[in-house]
Length: 383
Ligand SMILES: *Cc1c(COP(=O)(O)O)cnc(C)c1O
Image (cartoon, rainbow, N blue to C red; front, side, top):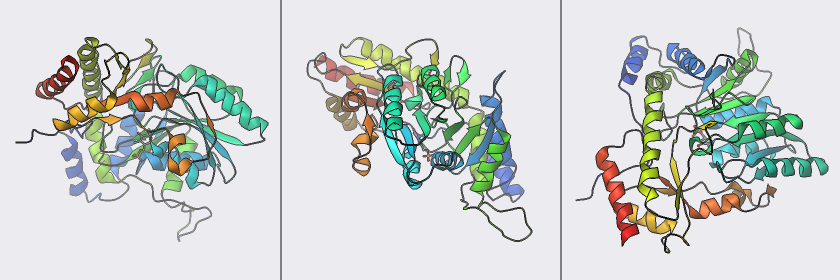
């Protein structure tokens, strides 16, 4: 008999989600507005805000929608350029193309696998010299690992370019004690099914400005002017989160910190498991300034040190035991759809793509699951 599937990252309900949904049914709030939507926004606001940072949150239908609205509010137009980390999920870059602008992709650095400060500045100088208009920088906290916030934001400030922080994978991660998602002019969260918490599908835009939050909600609800009839002076979108989804989100916020704890334990499990085997590096925080939610645990394989065992050997051996694992995000500058777009780099993300593997990291994995994973790894490396 086939053993149960062990997923990379699967939904993990806390228990109270149904209560919020039942409330919505009881009061017939089956709409893209209602008390769960504002309640969920408030839960996230309270979670992210710190002693000296207060943020505003607009709940939306997806993280992609949040990125799209952020770029619209930064007035990104055809002919403009937006700098984006190359190693990321396509959703980080697609909204640039929705607006007819050109993405300019930038390589990663080795410590966090996120946008490299040196290559970023190189890209900015090159594009400015070519007379291009750079409207925004999109940095991504990939797999929950914060990018080098201080360095990146210093460069952005030096050239006066706003930062959109793609924190879709990093809810619960911090840099120097402050929450990821609160550093940029806009922060983006995702509650897709595989993320650290889920609303089955959903996202949020984070900003420090109440005015920008209101603008985002205006655009997300078809840009209706203040009039008794339907009147529109701008193009609008249908991007608001439903009150049912937001109810799931309210329950999930109650268990977010527990989920972060479990994912961090999974990372520790891999650190210990692979410490016995040379040639496998389990990615971890480069210093105490970084605190990752370890949404996914990532290993980099050096075949010269593993005695020839490759990333694919490990992936296929896990697959045979019905355990899901996956190569890292394929860099955007290597994607057929983005062929010919400008790229600044020197091979860091290409190498990580070739040698890296994401391992099962869910907060709902059991001791039995860990035993199965551990058995497969031990068998490959001691054969
Ligand atoms: C999931 C994800 C998104 C998109 O979020 P959706 O809610 O799926 O639209 C954007 N960027 C990154 C890095 C993601 O992982």
